[in-house]
Amino acid sequence: MYDYLKGTVEYVGPEYIVVENGGIGYQVVTPNPFVFSAHLHEALHIFLYHYVREDAIVLYGFQTRQEKALFMKLISVTGIGPKGALAILASGQVDQVVHAVEQEDETFLVKFPGVGKKNGATNDLGFEREA
Image 1 (cartoon, helix red, strand yellow):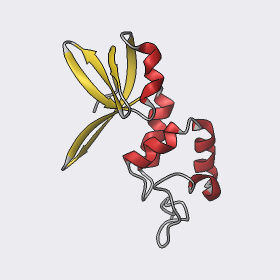
Image 2 (cartoon, rainbow, N blue to C red):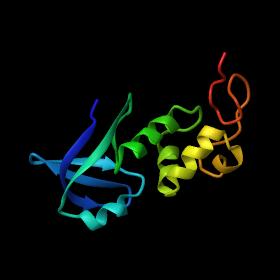
Image 3 (cartoon, helix red, strand yellow):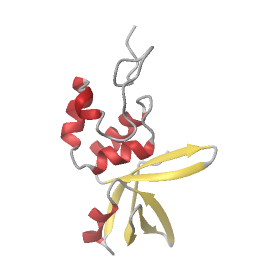
Image 4 (cartoon, rainbow, N blue to C red):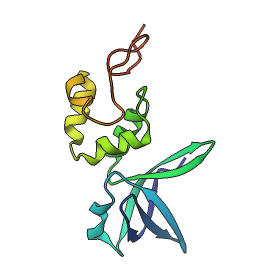
């Protein structure tokens, strides 16, 4: 598992940035790549989440450990995948999202793609119920 990547931001696109380290350009998917535009050709620490699935290997990158931790918490929720979690983080309302998750504020959370009401063994937000 990777914790962070320290390197130079060489490219900023609509879905990802490229961070060069040791002669290798790493494609890093971020919630809002354009926030890195101000740091083009500067060395930065990008906090990483290494996502592996049978059909994809992706590096997701975040400006802070808090943002990375929230991403990890969001993708653990039933029905929210990495794309949905990125959309939530891209809203720029990290503190509000943290509060909404902690308070299980369904009204706030269902406005994001990939978040909806769930039934069965989970509560309304998709969190597993405690036994």
